[in-house]
Length: 286
Ligand SMILES: NC(=O)c1ccc[n+]([C@@H]2O[C@H](COP(=O)([O-])OP(=O)(O)OC[C@H]3O[C@@H](n4cnc5c(N)ncnc54)[C@H](O)[C@@H]3O)[C@@H](O)[C@H]2O)c1
Image 1 (spheres, rainbow, N blue to C red):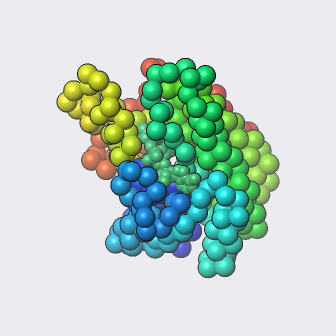
Image 2: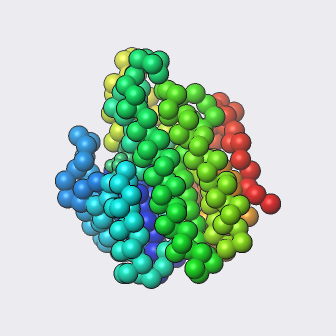
Image 3: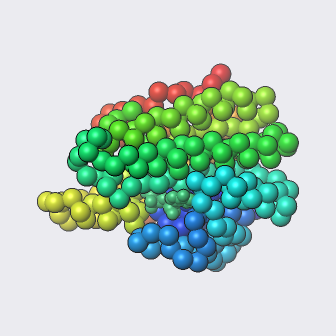
């Protein structure tokens, strides 16, 4: 219960990595505001709602608060942070996870044969990070403490699936760094985390659609991790009084886990894919 009294916002937490992070924070007693476009109805054909995530956080010993927020809508985002301020008075952690992944993400077509609407990944995935951080920074700098985390991936340097995907992840890595420079005098840290393959509902569906994949490779590839794994790493950074040393950096989640001695929920060490997929560009600021 190391995070009792800590207040967090995790965006896009109805399923997948956002849900896993929210549960890992809840397990340590945090109060976690979890957002999705609707509270009780799933907003996609994949399973999961934020009210279910909030309920699971409560069962784990944390406090879950489900809030309907479309992160493409600035007024709804403003109201979320106003609610946090009204109810809690402060904010310790923002995890920018929501990402509008298009259903044709893994189709091999080149960018000009995919719809222009693929740019939605920049709207909810890059711009939405900026808007949420803009509100969070106002709360965090008042107390001179806080942590803002962007969920990114090797896609930030390694071509994966398409042009808009890579553009989005490079942008959030850079945004985390430049925010760190401006937040430094206020002792608020900003980092970007590179997730490897994560066993989410969406990833499992995508793998099932790739012809020829069989056995574990088609369901739970051994390099993959649980959705809670990045949450454990974020909890460790939040608990670390010297976390400003990381600010501005882009980190491979698996390497940061090693730094803090963290394993996945089944006890496995998650491998870094630095050699195979690429290395982050942004080191922490001085
Ligand atoms: N799954 C992986 O293997 C993997 C690997 C590296 C990085 N990532 C990154 O992790 C993040 C989450 O991915 P995921 O695999 O869990 O995907 P996902 O599609 O399952 O989850 C995305 C979440 O964002 C929410 N969301 C989408 N649009 C929204 C909007 N307009 N307003 C509010 N919420 C919205 C969805 O409802 C969902 O909860 C993404 O940034 C993704 O790029 C995933």
